[in-house]
Length: 404
Image (cartoon, helix red, strand yellow):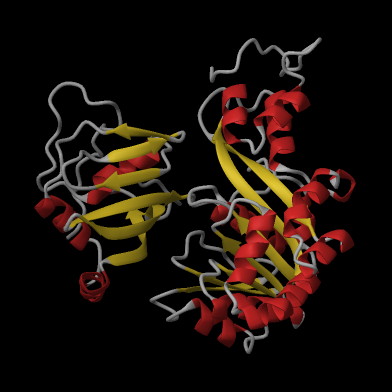
């Protein structure tokens, strides 16, 4: 069904007055609100109005509550018959969705696609629910994301494995897109990405770049990764290392002279190493430790925090670089000692999450409350900030720890 021509509704605030009806509403009208408000996500589920996430907070839109029939109609309108069949079989579906620009909003030179969304559709108590994540149409730079400059240096490495880790919604895909774009802008490489789904659309610049999506272009990360090694790549991006086969192939690709980027849903470097090793049977773990120690380049762990002033969020990173000491700890199964090496590795470009949180707070970019809530060691962070002592530290002009 084509989206309605009416202007997008002005939802997105806490309910006030009479809620707007959802009957016959097209999903595009809700997605336009997400774009207009620079929100990050839209959630639809039965017995709830549409909910958007603004600056990290969930906000109910001023609409009626969804019925099971409404969520099914709304979602089935935007997917193919094949995907309907797939969803009804597997009960889950990942796909990307392009939001058209309404005719009345189109200007000369403006594309027909206003925004792209990553979508996960699933069953919730027998009914259909979905989460839409807004994907920026423009690929931001490392500087614009306020990421550590060393990420650009890492993306210029000729070979090895670079992991970007963190929980869902921590900006991993965006950070990787910025690093891939840096390569694409500056180096004549062949880049192959394997994603589920494709989020950022890259164009050929100095590099040539091929993007493959699970479902439409390949059946699995493992299949695509195995095939990519026969496609003359210089750089590979694996959207997620989900299983033993994909992890083994990614390490082998790095070992055979390729620069490989991948993600894990882990919170820090030592946890990431343990997760990789533990995927393998005990009889293979020693060999994998050796391979990983020889080929890992860096692990970048990330979380997003609300900015202290104004809208938007800012990344906080732990950076582990594969120094000889780090490689030895991986090889000798002493990953619990990795945080200590990171803590004293500033001269190499390493930083702990707590050190980053301290720096962001001292620059006035995040609040003290958020820094303490997201740190690994509250007492250690307080010492680094010198809280409670003579001349207690704080960002210039600060007088409290709450968001302004």
